Length: 201
Image (tube, rainbow, N blue to C red; front, side, top):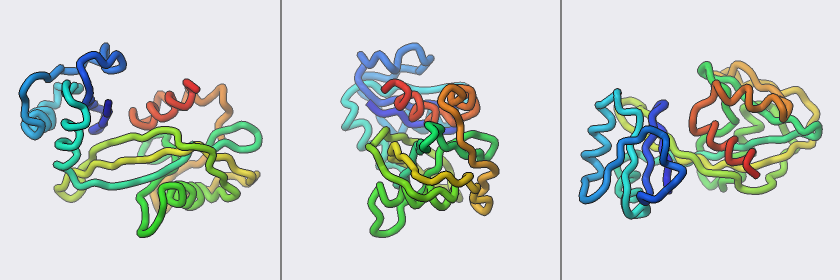
């Protein structure tokens, strides 16, 4: 199954018996359909909150992502020695540090570099892969699909986070575990999904 966000709207791709897609008010599309046509209908129908393309998930997904310029990114959910989690505030949303891969970087290298650059936090150790997220955005007339790979991390640093203001980050803060859900209401849906995946564990 695949979930892709476009602004606050959702595109799901998967079989028709996918319980996690039910109850989201998605328009169900099944049978013989053209992926590009369904995307264009969705794009211009702002009243449609989401669609669910049902069928061969891998086949539909390969056709779907081929329509966009693809961007690879990586980021982290960082926990400090006090058990607090690192969040950033940018564009009026709480978020997790992440960014695009540079040449010859691995996903892990990019994830740690972005945390260091965006928050001034060092002493990082990657624990394990956490989740993948996808979202579509427009850039100079092109539609891009960003594939973000998320990792859980720890830090030995006791430094206060320093937001990278030149990247539009207004705040970087440590949040206590019992306060995390309070911040999730003001997050992008894809980031909320990542945190919910973590909290399930």
